[in-house]
Length: 254
Image (cartoon, rainbow, N blue to C red; front, side, top):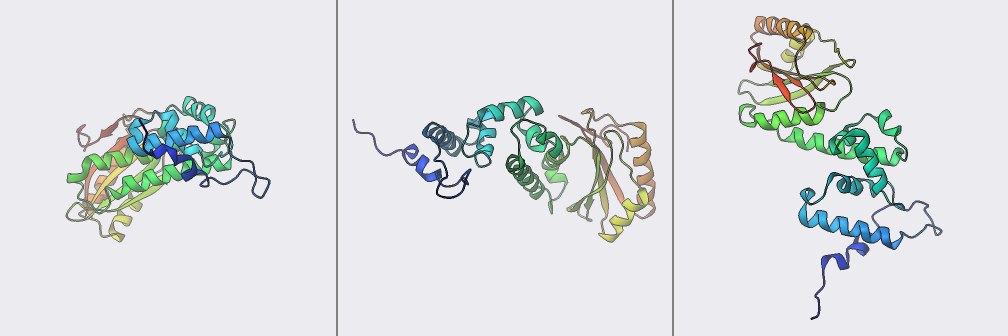
């Protein structure tokens, strides 16, 4: 029985020129066939089955292909996952920690951070200019995507209009591993500048435990007093941990 043409038959040729040569010019080495075939098979599985068809280490290989065009990237993919825990941990890892991994250079860092930036923009697009009540799950996903893997605390404010539509999301302060300075006056001042009617406060705990500290509770109370004085509603304060979040409103802290 004669087999008809298959997608994989042309896959290697299709992607043969999409990776920059390791040494540009006439002397550039050709991609070894066993690496080219492996990459073609991975790409085919991804295009046909999507990300669900690949385990984390193979998805990481796909990201590394362009950064390392002439070498087997499977060992580095596995090393990165062992170092940072999972795919999200790798792409969200701080630059200085990525560069500490043997085999990671500027090209690898660039590819990883492009993936991270794309993930942030996609998650943000699902909540910005959307009504918060109807997109609450997407909002939580966005906060987890952008903040859960940070190694220092960050304080963000989500500004809402009178219809509770998210009109702006802005980082207000960055701090250490367990503290971030926040000034209630600056928070409400920015809300007035944006003509916002309501706020949602968000910050992360690099420890992974979203349980609020007494300092978190006191700071939230100060912002609520300042916001109330100007007719601005404080809807909630979310604390983002590694795998879960805590809502002040749900915990009865607001």
